[in-house]
Image (cartoon, rainbow, N blue to C red; front, top):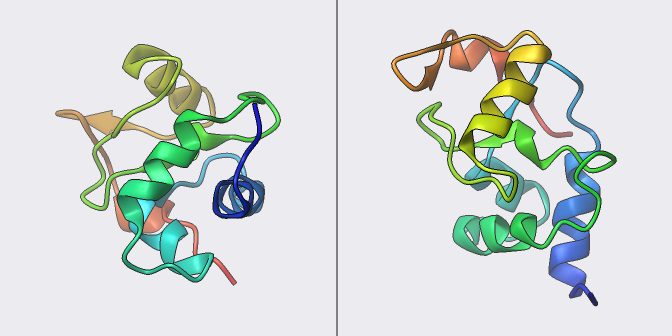
Length: 103
C-alpha cells in the first residue's frame, strides 16, 4: 500500500512516543504541521502497515478516551495496559501525566 507524504509523516512522528506515554490525534496533527487535520491523522493511522514498529496504539482522543485502532479496541487497551497505562471508565487515568509532548 502506497502512503501519501502526510500519512508517512504521521506514522514516522509516532515513533517518537515512548512506551507508557500517549498523545492525541490533535497533538499529532499539530506536530506534523497540520493543526486542523486530526481526523486525517486517524485515517492515516488506520493504514499503518507496521503495527508493531509504528505504535499507533499510543494515539488516543483528546479527552483521554481510546479512539480507534485497526486491531480493535480490546487490543489497543491491552497494548497500552501492558505499557503501564491505566484506565477507568474507558478513559486514561492521569491522562495529562501520560501525555507525550512532541518536540
